[in-house]
Image 1 (tube, rainbow, N blue to C red):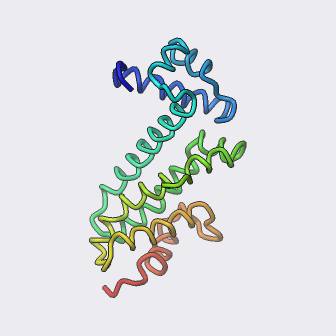
Image 2 (spheres, helix red, strand yellow):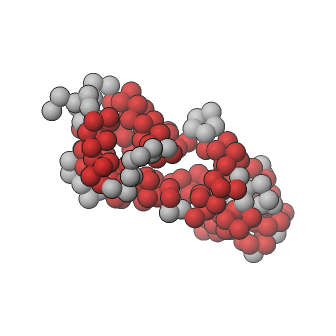
Length: 187
């Protein structure tokens, strides 16, 4: 995206986010984003030659960055890998259920959202693996990459369908982490 400052780009992506929050993914148009950003459609197309899809993809990527920044900042307060995993599960749950736009999209157009998040490279799982890998190294996994993938998938599974587990309860999540996520550890 040449010829656009970082501030202008961020302004457009934030405007797109507000439009998606207001109307959803399927109903957000380039006109909506341009109006919200205080710029013209022509400028948007010059900055985002891929049009609506490029802006939506960039907006989702930015929001994922923000989401994972909040998660990793919550992990920074813990020294023990078990405590970090517990916080990761609880924080992922908290961030998911407290994200108004995400909850609205899951309620009104889950197929549109999930198709964008669970594409060929699955950006959510990919980012979660990045966060998990150092934890798995510290936990003593023989193959930290494989362990990060496995534990990341389990975390997403619990977050999307916790069953009877109270995902906001650190004690309950701690039992699950010790039993299911770190049950392979011998120490």
